[in-house]
Length: 562
Image 1: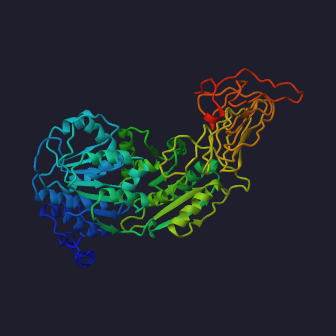
Image 2: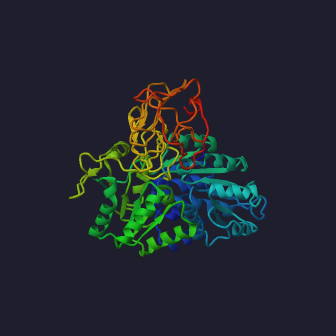
C-alpha cells in the first residue's frame, strides 16, 4: 500500500467527479444522471479501485456504493484490452445475493457505460436459462450474476471465467447470510489467481473479515458509516401490540396517517401474503414480494410501488435486499427480525441522501428480547409510543407463526419450528398440534401441546414437554434422563439415553422422524422399555396407531431418537 496516496489527501481535494480522474465518457454519463458531487463512499472507494488494489468497503444500501465500484471498473476496463476476447469470457465478474440487486447493478453499469464500447449482461435464476446462453455467445466485458445461476452456466460450459480481471462481491454479508459461502468458494476456484478483488458489505462482522482474508490481498479499507449504526435521519418508534392485532393496527396507522408509499417487513413469506391480502380487503393498494414469487411478479410489484400504484409493499428481508427506491418515507417492521443487524438494513431503506424518514416497529410482548438486542446494537433506546386501544393485555401470550420464514444462517440455533407452532428460543424443540395450539418455551422450561396434539416434540437437554387431553399423546423427552408422564387417557412416554419407559401405558409406535411420536401402543424401546400400569393395575390401552401426516411406521431406539 506504500504506492497509494493517503486517503485523507483524496478527501481534501475531491469536490466533484472530475476530481476523481474518470474518463470523459464516464463524466458525461454522470452529468446526464444529474449527479454533481460524489458521495462519501464514492470519494473514498473510487481512487483506491482506480489504482488497481483490493478493497474492503463497509457501506449500506443507499450510500451510492454501486457507482463506487462500477465507475472505476468501467474506467479501468477501457484503458486495457483483454488478452483474449471471445464469447462468454467476461473480464469483470460482479456477484450479488439477489435477483433484484443483480438487475440494479447491471442497470448502473448500463447507465454509466452507455458512452463506452464495453458490454455487459445480467444473470440470475428464476427465469429461462436459454436467453442467457444465447447472450453468452457474444463477447462480454462485465457479467453481473447470482452465484447459483453462474455455477449452472459454469457446469454447462456456457461461461468461461478464466479471463476475469476484476471480482466484486457486493453485499457480501447477505450472501453469507443466505448460505452462499460454498457457492462463492466454487466460483473462486474457477477464477485466475491474479485479479483485483473488491468486497462490499453493510457491516464488518467477523464472518466478513474471515471471508476477506481468504479473498483479498493487502486491501485498502473504507467505511462510510459507524459499524452497525442506524442513520440519525430516521425517526425510530415502536408500538407494543399483540401479534393477532398487528394486521388491524397497521391498516389503521396507514389510513390515519395518509401514507402513500410504505415498505413493510415480515418474517415469513406466507405472512407477507396474508398481510397484503388483508390490506387489500381494507381498501389499500398492496402487494407482497418474497422468494416464492416469480421474477415477473416481483418486478411488477416493485414497478407498481415505484410508480405509486401500489401504496404498500410487503416484503421479507431477503426479497427486499438491494431494493433501490428513492426517497422512501416510511418503513414498518411488522415483526422484528431475528438478527439485530437486519433491523439496520431494514430501516436503511429510508432516510437516504439527506432526506428524513420514519421507521415504526410493531412489537408483540414475546419480541421484547429481540427489541433489547436491537437497542443494544444501535446503542440507543427506541421510543415507545402507545396507540390508544391497542395496548396488549398483561396476560398476552405468544401467537403461532409460520414454518416457512426466510431466515438467514445467523438466526437462533436449535430453534426448530412446528406446524402451527411458534418460534422457540435457543434450544427449543419441535411440536405440532392437531388443533393448532402448540406452545414453545426456551431451554430448560416446560412446553405443552394441548388436546389432540400429534407430536410431543423434541427438547434440548433438561427440557420437557407433555400433552394433555382425552386423546393426546404425552411424549416427554430429555437427553439426560428424568421421568415423564402422559396425562389423560393417552399414552405417556419418557425417553432417556439408556432406554424407554411408559408411565401410563405402552410405548407408542414411532414415525419416520426421530422427534415424532404417533398415537397408540407400539413395540418396546431399545434397552428394555416396558409397559406401565393403569390405575387398576392393568396395562393401559389406546386406539390403534395412526401415524401423523408425513410419518412412517416402525421402530426407533431411544438412542436414535435422542
